[in-house]
Image 1 (spheres, rainbow, N blue to C red):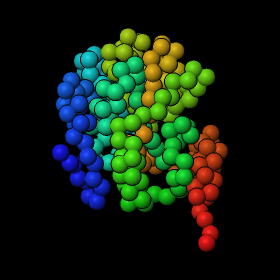
Image 2 (cartoon, helix red, strand yellow):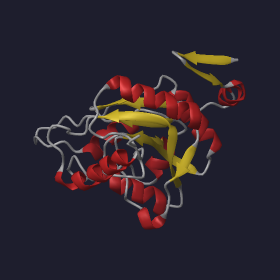
Image 3 (tube, helix red, strand yellow):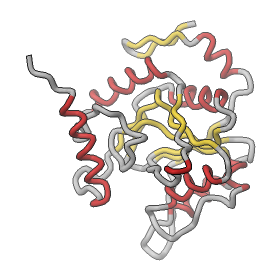
Image 4 (cartoon, rainbow, N blue to C red):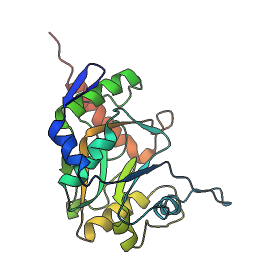
Length: 225
């Protein structure tokens, strides 16, 4: 069986047969904390999503300013979950954020042309379909940017849910730390690439250095004849 997506072609016979057996159910949300204090608490928003679904399922949350660049992200997530039973949370590759572990060396972080990003997404999917990198080093616990998170619902509930700290930023670092320190693995799915606006018009101060490093890597790919 062959699946075609525009000009990109994936031979997924064995993969799809595997996914169809005991395939995980993944519920996808864009989370929002509707409160009266004028300050979003993303821990509360994530827990509202978490508590809507059975413990055996998975919860996927995507930032409001992000989007997938490939159609088969769901199948790739199912494959990653099945191939990595010790992993209880997954993220993906992203163009802009504050974690080099999750970005793509060589990508232009200031390019917002969706044609560029969808072509890159297809390229990564073709060469890394469903494959992951382990981001569970205890020394890096908490070094994670939550543009996208897919987590096992029962596991997160057993850890007390997502951290509620009354802030928009920071709970993603805390949940990464909690998952790793509890003995579970956290993986990056390399074949799923996401575009993230990430305040391109007014960047966070804490992320400027990381974005600049990524831009330097992009410039290194430029060669003169």
